[in-house]
Amino acid sequence: TPSPRRRGVGPGAAASGVLWGELGGRPAAHFPVNLFITAIGEGVMDSDTPAKIQQRLAQVVRKVPKEQNTTVEVADGGSADLKLRVFVVNSEDAKAVGEYVSAHPDQVPAPFVVLARELRMAALYDPSEMDLSDASVADRLRKQAK
Image 1: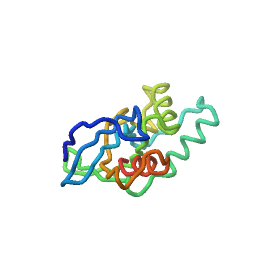
Image 2 (image 1 turned 120 degrees about the vertical axis):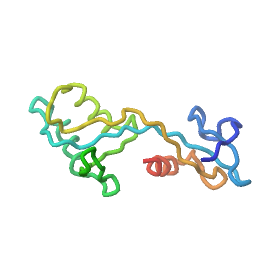
Image 3 (image 1 turned 90 degrees about the vertical axis):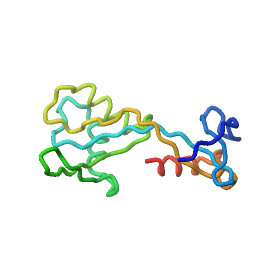
């Protein structure tokens, strides 16, 4: 993984923490993204959950992108299928899952299992080809980090 020299924050990205440097003689920058990762469990949402939150969480369960489905090997030599959901930390979906889990810490089986509340990641990009002042560019980098 390249380790850029810190040259400051790039234009249009004030306070974003973007690191600038070089990679193979070309300009390079890291776009930091903090991710919230949860596994979809086998539990059912508690009936005390407000209808609006239930709708959002039901969508979180229904819309698991195929690249977020995985199989892991477990200690006894078997395997388990996992449906993961990866969100940017401050997204509405991450907040809804986090709040639900915090409000139901002893629910077994749980509908959600938080694996990481804040996993720090970064997307490497060429700042001479991408302008972070364009919101769609920043969104694309966030999706790549996920």
